[in-house]
Picture 1: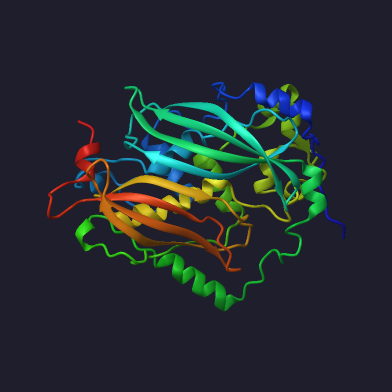
Picture 2: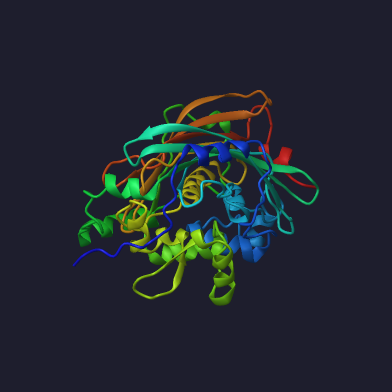
Length: 388
């Protein structure tokens, strides 16, 4: 039976289109894809449910009151649920794949915060790729402010832009067997690893006790399925997802944002590549796949588990190298590469990070910096960031 491939707008990377794109460099982009503007107990709970993070510091008020924070805070990754950091703009009909981010986190988001993001288009460059041939790498920078105009975080990110027809014709990933042929024994081992997740919590991890070469207990995600994607969209939809007349009016204004599903006759967003096989095939990917920021949230989950309640994630860099398809499993891993006192006088630890799938591929190589309490100096990252 022939595969059903969605019919989408087929944009082209032309010199004229790039000239118009170049004129936009440096502008502050209009942000229409804000999901959660306010940080509330409900929005945080929906978000951590959507990434599968059971840390009580985010949701258990009684537990959080007894920590150094004195109350609930949101995980650093919550900002992905405010706004994913990017605005899809320019080059109409040309597919965009978010392919990496470099985050710097300054202060936590607290319940009651109203978050305002800003986003600037910082440039692009043309490259060659084995996925689609001609490729544009687009760069954006976003910042997140609370209601007191305090900068909570900034992110520099890059987006791969390719022609859909070119990526389909290349068929780079068509040889992968999907869904993955798991055995019951393999699935039992995966589920056991998922349930063995270790949350440091209130057991303080002091800087003095960390050893270079030390490995972080892994966090395992998968097999990735439709409900995992639905849960993520409930907690952190990177685009505006609407129903019925609301979506229809939006698509009438922006026809290239949607396509007609050949099986249901419904108009679906291009974003449904993440849960609709015919949409994924239309952009040159053989099966529905994860969202880049979703995978980055899994990475942050690994790091906050390890640092415990008294640590702070300061920087987090990751490249989204491979697609994580429905039926895939990813083992999020990390290893300490360096410990030192940083330029701010904080007790820092650098961590090399990876997300290894069942095919042995590193889907998200990166590196992060965390800061920890020092037993000898009597310092605490929380004390610097705790709001009065």
